[in-house]
Length: 77
Image (cartoon, rainbow, N blue to C red; front, top):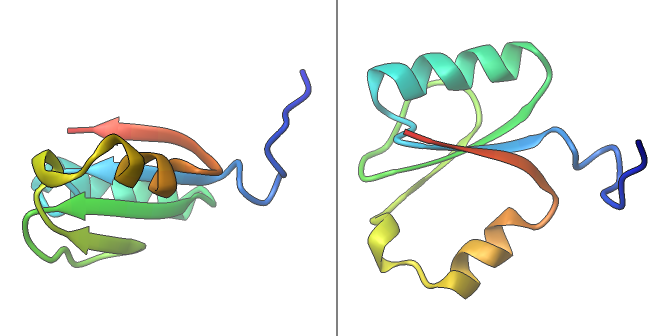
């Protein structure tokens, strides 16, 4: 199966609800298996990966599109 996304970017994943109990554990698990973890939440999160603080409801479709370029998946918690 071929992909148009460069292999270095296929491992970028996003987790919403990144600072919660499940989000924190999911980010740790994904990072431990080699994923480049990015997160989004209303409050700052401890743990692996970069986490943006903000309200998802205030993002436009273009805001999301810019963030998702090169991402393999998003886990919406």
